Amino acid sequence: MVLRGKLLLPDFKVSFVDENKVSNLEGKIVDVLFQLASFSCEIADNDEKKAIDIYADVLSFLYKMPMLFSYSPYTSSNYVFNAFEYFFIYVIFRHLEDISSLKLEDVFKQLESKRKEYDKLITYIVTSSDIREIYEALLYTPADTRPGYNFTSLVSHLQLSSLLTWALQPESVDLNYLRIAGLLHDIGKQINPKHHVTASSEILKKLIESADKAGLCMGESLDKIKDLVEKHHTRAENVLNMADRLAASADRLSGIVNRYLKEIPMGECYNDANSYDCIEKYGKEKYEEASKTLFKRIVGETLELSRFTKDSKFFEFLNTQEVKRSEERKLGSPKAYLVYIDFPGIQKFITSFPNLRDMSFASTLVDFLTSVYAFILIDTEFKNLGKSRIPAEALLSGYGGHSYIVVRSDLGKDQIKKLFENVIEPIDVKLDVKIVDFIYEDYVKNFNEVWAEISSQQYEKYLINFDEQIYSLGLHEVCT
Image (tube, rainbow, N blue to C red; front, top):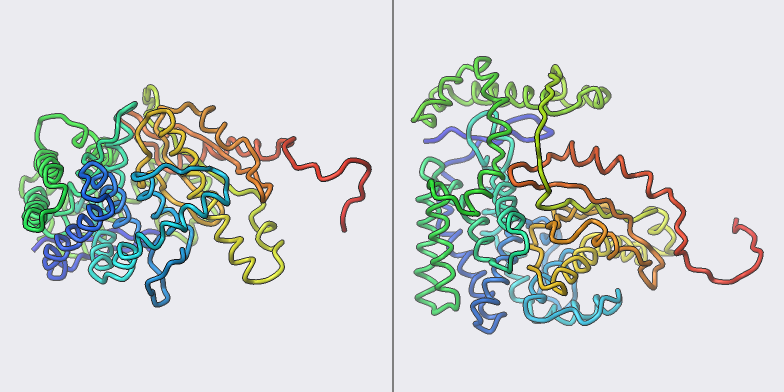
């Protein structure tokens, strides 16, 4: 039995993995992967290239389940329920047809017209208890079981690995089987962390057997994916190896963790070939204590704690000593940017509508504009320039009137900003856009670094905008 748990934040407690529960997940994972592959082939009319492209984006939503899950009972429908259902429809639809018009009303109509075609797939994803169980297991399984590394979930690591396989290939065409390999390369860690490559390979082997038996359209691509997964820890360098290593950020954290191993009782286990067995003998209490100690040390070396003095009384992990280290890192040219998109004056916009029903739609519209519509604008520009599509994983978050989208540096920052320079008709709104460097060949900036750069650009929102609509000329009185 393996002792492992994820350090939950901001709760600052360890949630231990129920090994008996996750050991029974293999069959459910294989079945879900098979069902999603079947839907992808059906939608693509058995065109293998299109099916794999669709499958990559559909699988991405396996790790974005809260976007689609509903707290109310779900029923089959021809109507789109929320902004993220529009997003799901778009990332499938774009592999079969191009958006014919980028006018806001036309985009709504085009996506809504496809809702019925994808109803079976959407209903399966939203109502499947197996998918919910798999997602929860991914969320509470640490990407690395060792204290000091166990605050990142497997669901985050797999999404980032997939995103990096795209970001590290500038100017590339769509090779979505690489993204799928990124999304699945460590899926076996849920079941058997000691031998996770073998466990992941076994899942893919059973998926291929089911696909071959059913005559699915993507047999050759699934073989490539299995081969990549089996080799992602070998010495042979490939893009999945690079993405996995960069997503783990082991080089950045290991230096900090190694400096403080003497402060935890299980420090000697980190250089032990049988580290799982070594850590297990210390028990849950020591494991949680070590997880908290090392995380505090990481916080002390990576955050400017003086900025969080007021927060320290609410969050225990901020009560630690700040260690100032002047590490100069030569980053080179960025491989990808983080684009922050904000809806200006969100509260004023929503409350300007006269009744509850209109306010509800206004709230949905805000999320649609900052997340879905912004993604479509950038993705369409990539397509028009003959570049690869943006993966669904690139939408890191989208709620509350703003979103974060990762964009490969094939497009310059000015090119990206130009996509948002016009006022969106007919609602007369101009989205506020900030762009910062994010992913490099050997480094991914953390949120603290990124937000500091975004904040430094906030003055731009106060600049006078001369694009406002002029409704009439002459002297006017301010409305009261």
